[in-house]
Length: 139
Image (cartoon, rainbow, N blue to C red):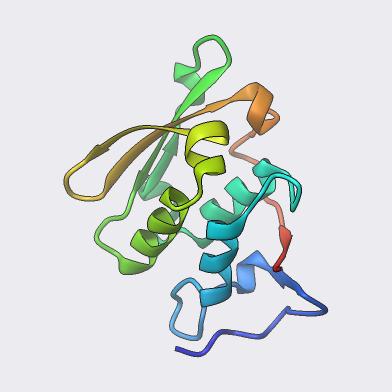
C-alpha cells in the first residue's frame, strides 16, 4: 500500500493525512507511534492522533470523564475487528513510554478490547470536544 503524501512537508506529517490511499494507517504513522518519545511532541498531541486515525471513532473508543477518580481517567479502545485499528494498538504496545508512563495499560479482553488510564498530570486535561489538527514530526 502506498502512503498518502498529501499534507507532508519537510519531515512533518499531518495526522489526518497519515492514512494510506485505502484508509489504513500509513507505515510512517505506525513507525512514528512505535518510536515516539516525549521530547518529540506532547503526549496529548499523540493521543489525539490515535483518536483521529481510529476507524469507527466514538463507537470504538471511550474516554470516561465521568468516571475520573483522583485525576485518573479510564480509556477504552475497541478495534471492532478492523485491522487498521489493530495496527495502531499493536504499535502502541511496542512503545513503553505510552503503555507504562502516559497511557497506562490496565487490561485486555478477547475480541480486541483494550483498557488504559490517563492522568491529568500526564495528559494535560484532555477534553473530548477538542478538535485538533495535529502535526507530528517523523524522524
